[in-house]
Amino acid sequence: MRVTLLLNPKAGNGGQSSADLRRAVESAGHAVEVRRAKQSGLAEALRDPGDLVAVAGGDGTVGRVMKALAGTEVPMAILPTGTANNIARSFGIRGDAADLAARWATADVRRVDVGTARGPWGETRFVESTGVGLLGHLIHPDVGDNLKGTDDARTEARRAARTLAPLELRVELDGRDLTGRYLLLEAMNIRCAGPNLWLAEQARVSDGKLEIVRALERDRVALVALADAFGTARPHLPTERGKCLRVWCAPDELHVDDEHGGDLGSWRGRAEVEVTLGAATVGVLR
Image 1: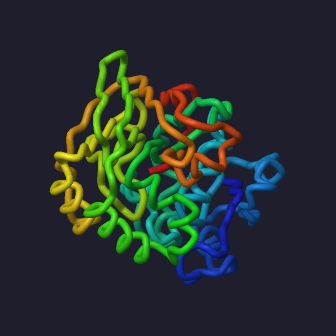
Image 2: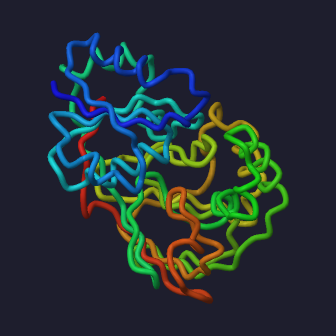
């Protein structure tokens, strides 16, 4: 195949250079063009993508490319080189670049929903999750800007799970009232988010439904246990499945994937945010 290899050289520990990744893909018999996966130049990098777009990077890079390819027929492959790699882990994609590239020619293409969060700023697509509470806290600039990688984020998640003040939120799922005092509310598209918090083990990425994970004040013990264990624990938090989540929140409380609500646009006070799936899909090799 003719492969466009998009890479983020800063992802993870930098263990594989662009030359290493090129050789790994070429060793599987593919023709490769290597490009940088910069947000500002992504549209140009994907102008002539070839038969397959391969992405070497962490969740931020992989998610941006998935959103850019949503609605097209060009499939993508993931070479996970980040530290969390939530998207790759959720799809069961693991192994070194050469082994993964060798399987591309015969791999199945799985259609994956791309979600949409709509609010006062307009709309923003997401791949992992949208929500408020614990993960929004980790992404808040006052916190996230001081975290140096996944290990720091895990330490802060453990602390925050124990001390975070609950948010009184008006919440509706498909018209049903789920209002309460929330430590965490996540509309999940994949199985894990943040620093490898496995929140939605039963998430299905192509059925047009969200996995809504809820931790109210009464669920703090379960949230602490989940934060303490990370990748080894499976969720024991209340979940609901549905097509449309509405939550009334403030910009400082919200995140959409790795974007903080305060960076999405100019809005003040609490307002309705609508979260849905299935408006567009992207094909992922696995």
